[in-house]
Image 1 (cartoon, rainbow, N blue to C red):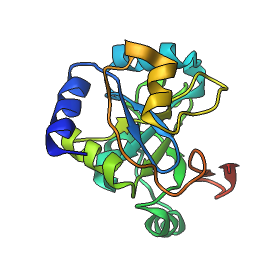
Image 2 (image 1 turned 30 degrees about the vertical axis):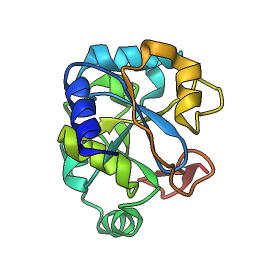
Image 3 (image 1 turned 90 degrees about the vertical axis):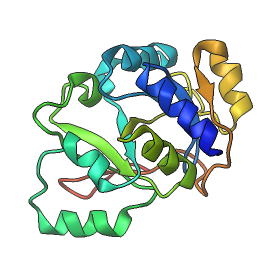
Length: 185
């Protein structure tokens, strides 16, 4: 992804836009996680319930830390250090001020520090974590290329960043931060 396209995408995100971009295994739909209108747009595009919550993606732990409660378990910290940056999403305790539109009303939040170069560059250009939900209609097959995103969402997505997916065959696995158990493989 060119620096120009990343700057343009970051500007659109700051203005409440929705950007599609490649991740580890599928294209994601991203927006500013603190912009309720932008999040509602993503949920509407997907036909997704607010009660499901969303994933945040970041370039480094410092970008997701403001959304999380302090992590006190040293074993969990070690596990995160082994998995991140990487292609594993973790469900962790949410910070007290995290909006319900991100958590689905739970006291946890799904987060990932990505190793995907393009997705990490987008987070860096934006300056903080992004909503990252698979580019699909709720329950449907996630888009794996820019053309599939355009076919699904038309002009409703403000920008599609072109690039290669990472090495996964689908969305990232999700692990529970309390038990370490696999919630999605």
